[in-house]
Length: 395
Image: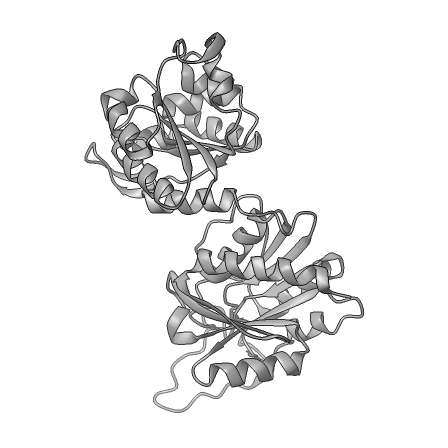
């Protein structure tokens, strides 16, 4: 964030107090933060607070005489790389959706040349109201990034969606929006989540993969400018904005979906925890208990999706994932060599499966690259940056 020029906008709402911490985080990370507030925002937090945190004057008046020619709604955003409105009230979102500009902040947003991100903050009923949802859909269609909202306790005492994201989460969203577009023009295919292999109509063979790492990689690739297709096993996750998602259940369904897209992909990242085996003949009826007697299932191997793609005549740049329980470096190196992969990302299963954090090491022809431990999205961005740097050197 060092030297990145941001305009932080505040609208009226109790979540405005969080904007103080957001401003502090952005400045601490090296950002050049200019603040514009609505009159309603000034009733929740004073301009002096934001001025003290950013070290810059705070702007509230469309007619402020400090700006030459009274053109603050134009001049204040011209050198900015991103405008972030946090909190963004339901009223302000409605203004943006309909091109209204009756104060400084809404005028700045309408006259901007840089990207815009909003972090909604409102009561759960206001967020779920069809009018708000139509307005948010308009903003997305106009290319405006929506950060949040989150679900949880609200100041009004109700519980549900509508809470503004925490300052650290918004800071991560900003970092993503400003990320280098190292994959611009590239087509990236990603698999994520587990597969489910039927045993009978109600039982499956599966694993504990949450899909969080794969979805983080998909989001990071989209942030880097790629055209992303995500082939996903069954997970309870929202599709990253701008990503095309193909839902599958079994390994064979995932294989079929990958084969359709892989020939036109520039990069293939296999994050999914694909079941190695499936039941040869799933029972058409629910298998009943056998009164203590053993039940046998005959298993056969599933297709090796990553090996297939890596072995294509004009294969994309292939990245494998290896979740090991021991001997991480040795097992990852063996898998990379066996499948002839240019890059493999490896982690210990106990460090990452199901959680929000992970610890990843990359292995390629140059050796080991430790990405460290941290949130999965942070590691995904580091991975994508590594992939983008490796692409130009390919023959």
